[in-house]
Image 1 (cartoon, helix red, strand yellow):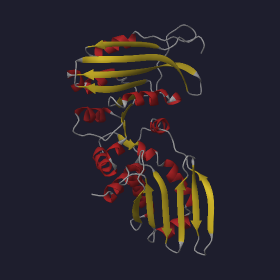
Image 2: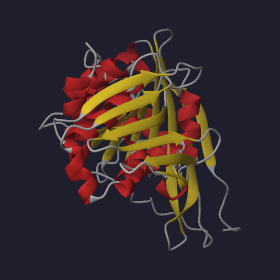
Image 3: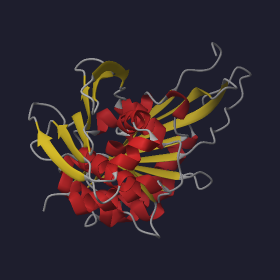
Image 4: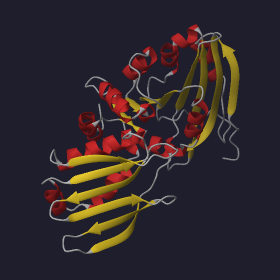
Length: 338
């Protein structure tokens, strides 16, 4: 890799996407043999970012390592000015187990004035048609926004972060987005539940599950002033897994920072109780089991807290519909406070 040319970049102002394509083709990083690098055959990633989130989105993409998209396009929209301000990079990236250098591209575009109104058209012109399209929408799906509806229509997979609008609002918006004819939809809040779901599955035997179906009471505690999207999706997953008889409640422990799930309590008919509490500052949970005969068993168990980049990387590996998510979402819509 020492002979590979450093990344090449272009900054400028253009009128349309065709000029961007021309400038991008002029960026030619080379491999050890001095020849142009083959384009990595992975995916298109389109990010619809607000000005205050665009830099964060770029840093997340840069940290994806082997999950690096072949072409990542970050879109910002500004009402002032006109045309497109662009920063584009083409560079060598070592991909996969073959450790072969391939060409990957990052386009950070600020569309101004009338160009902002045609954001979806600009993106369409820059997509690689031979690769799947993943749209990362770091916010609540906005069906009144023409760019959202157009990008969703063209996406193979749509990854939202709808909890930024609050749990109940997020559940409603995601429910409108999941359709039979639309893209495969998920949310990073659902991805963040994976460690909790795995831990609960690990602690629940078939016998326990059968007992839970007789009317278990479950309380989910998170740090928001109202149930977060994650808490509602977890409750939906539990109702889907255990059945309609499960009694679900939410408890809030407000504190600064993003709402996260910090504790789950499960009371099973017959006297078994389970308490799981995330340990602050550690990728672990304190698990306390109370048995019907009065014994208490304490232990520490792993409970990772994936980073945003890790969550996104995991979602970029999937293209099919996430049926457990869709079922959990349907239940969450019924559970969410009105």
